[in-house]
Amino acid sequence: MIDTIVLAHRVNGRVIPGQARFEQVNPADPTDLRVTGPEADAAVMGDAVAAARAAVEALDRQGIEARSDSLAAVGHRLKADAPQLALLIARETGKTLNDARGEVLRAGRLFDFFAAETLRNVGEVFDSVRRGTAVEVTNEPIGVVAAITPWNFPVAIPAWKIAPALAFGNAVVWKPSEYSSATAAALMEIIAAAGLPAGAVNLVLGAGAAGQALCEAPGIDAVSFTGSVATGAKVRMAGAERSLRLQLEMGGVNGMIVLADADLGNSVACALNGAFFAAGQRCTATSRIIVEEAIADRFVAALKERMASLAIGDPREASTQVGPLVSMRQKELITRQVASVEESGLRPVVGGTATTMKHAFFAPTLFDAVPVEHAFGMDEIFGPVAGIYRVRNFDEAIAVLNAPRYRLSAGLCTTSLSHATAFRRRASAGLTMVNVPTAGIDYHAPFGGVGGSSYGPREQGRAARAFYTVMKTSYICPG
Ligand code: UN1
Image 1 (spheres, rainbow, N blue to C red):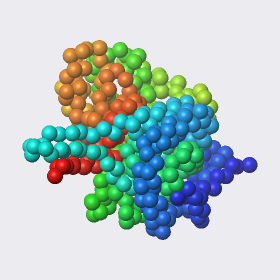
Image 2 (image 1 turned 45 degrees about the vertical axis):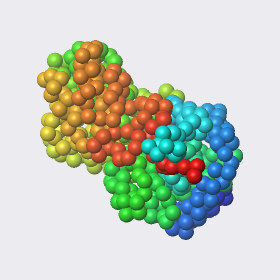
Image 3 (image 1 turned 180 degrees about the vertical axis):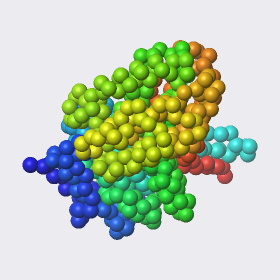
């Protein structure tokens, strides 16, 4: 018998059911789990924003110590409940159990980090040019923050938006992806039990239309969004019209350079992880593998061998390395994108549309000898698809690396300190990774890209405060 989860919004601490408007099934096994949920309309959004507005004041009255305790309680529960949550993530989104458990633990640490930041919201004091007058700068909450989050990190990305929002005194209206809403509801349960004022976090469900209704809801002050370039552009338009503060994390077309002096085993491992783990569904995934011609044949042979032994299968199994895409809709999209690359004349050396797989699985796919000017590798393909770019030297490699518009993470495999140093300077990206995969980031350091990849202040770590607070400069003369 298929398990069915029927979801509801959660506004002002209350469960608000609605007619089922979206459905997600386990993408690896449609007979296992079915999730349905309602779609928030303008009325639900209005209630959620009003509840959040009242909660901003309640958070202020409650004070920073209680709030810090609440964030720590969420962190503790996430770490304690990681096995159950990981299984739910695997069943709902197809993320492998190991990746999912790592993600939940990461989310727990994010709440721990911001529990401490709650107590560290220091300001600045200036000497005034006017004698006797004091000048003080305080960091105040922005107010009501809309968080719009994707399915691929269904706990960690919400955590790195909701935790800093609360830490700095804001309330949140959160619209998760319809592909990961059961996981969102599980996180919401944990947040709701942590002693925060009712309405400090409100969960509103639905697909793109709900996200749009949220961006257009009167009364929100800011939007923090992670998702596709196309949706990010819509959020930016809606935000500009309403003078909202915006933070957008969108696609990445990330390259990794492999120089002839690199450790071959490690560079193949970095490429395999970066390009194909999480079925390529990470904005930090490697899509351009830029290899110095001198070792290209050996590198491609070794990568093909490792790809052949990838454990592709049920994400609920601990031994699985690569699971399915999140949905049949994503599979159709990736299939169309790869088919159009094939029609342009490039032949995959591994995978491709000729390798058919069941349910939402898509075969890890590698193209070789991709021409630098080819359209493939300029826009993000959010799946397990990568191309090899053969280059003559380091300078050519840097040019290929910096060509796409969406430059989030850039990688280099080398044993040369001088090349590593030059790479760090010349790679145009928000993250540079030497001898580690382009994907996989720490939770306490800033995160974001350049070009069309990110817009607005950085997420994570101490940098998060810039987005979630507004500076007030106060002049006080005793009179
Ligand atoms: C990671 O690589 O560990 O949506 C995180 C994404 C990014 C997060 C990547 N915002 O894939």
